[in-house]
Amino acid sequence: MFIRYRIEPVGQKYGWRQGSSDCWYYASKSLLRFYGVANSKSDKEWAYLQHAKLIRMFINSMRKLHGKDLHHPMLTNVNMGQWINSEIEKIESTRRDILATAQKEMALCKSVEAILEDPSLWTPARVAEWCLLCRKLDPIVAETDLNSISAKRYTFLKIGQLILKYQKPEQIWTISEIFNSAFPPGLFEAVELTNRTAEELYKLLVKHGPLYTSGALHAGEKSTYSVVTSGKTPEEDVTDTRVLVESYITDSSHSVTVYGVSTDSGMVEYADPNDFTKPRRVAAAVFFGHLRAFEFNSKGTNFLKVNAANSDTVLQSKRIGAW
Image (cartoon, rainbow, N blue to C red):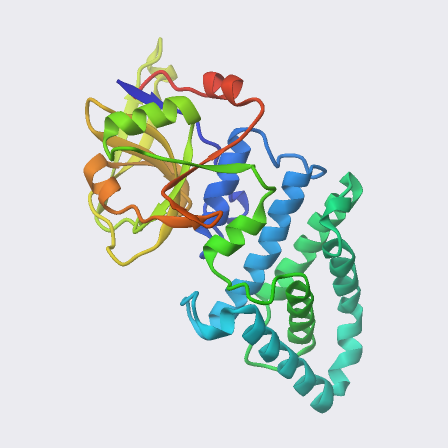
């Protein structure tokens, strides 16, 4: 037996791959796209996703300074806020000449604050404005040298200050915390795999569809191969390029979207945000051996599904009939 779904690739801007160390963002986004959720730039799910995008831009910039240790003391709201405030004060007291330049970008900060103040008032127009703001903020953050004093860095710090204003003081910037605040309550739901076997994963995928998971899933040894599906004529043959993963980097951390499994071959198929264009397959035993429980809604889990009103219809229409 086998099951496979036609997953939705995301990250077109970066060649159908994640733009930076944001596998959780791209893996979850591909699941939402699978169900047609967060496709419209006027729905609230899209607004939540843009909120997550804004937070991740800020965190990734902080990681440029402090490394990828998500539990660094600077990455708590209290300590990060103290650091941001001191940096802003330093610029304002020593480099007033750049503030005039920064004023042109400060309108963005006011718009961000207006939207962050009350997410319950997100109208289609506000969601569209939010998306536009994120597109404007993206290049500002990307081009900012955090070790320099500049107008762009000042704008970046002011935006960070606003974000912290609407977050819990005790919150720590971990992937779990971001994920839990990035989506409307109830959109994602934890599902449990009773036994780590291909047969049990098959049942889970049939019932719930593609799943989000995480662990030491950065591929180590891997090879590329092609599968040809014959058409009525040679011109109609379809060639699919796939990646066979033989091992993982033990101390890595990576999120992926699982959407297929074969109980006959004992292989798991998934989409890797590092390259959505090539399906990845790995022996079920190797895959399960590298999963790592993550926190979701204050509980540990290995898999998340999307709660979508149209799930039965979508799962039926996007099921692939060949392994």
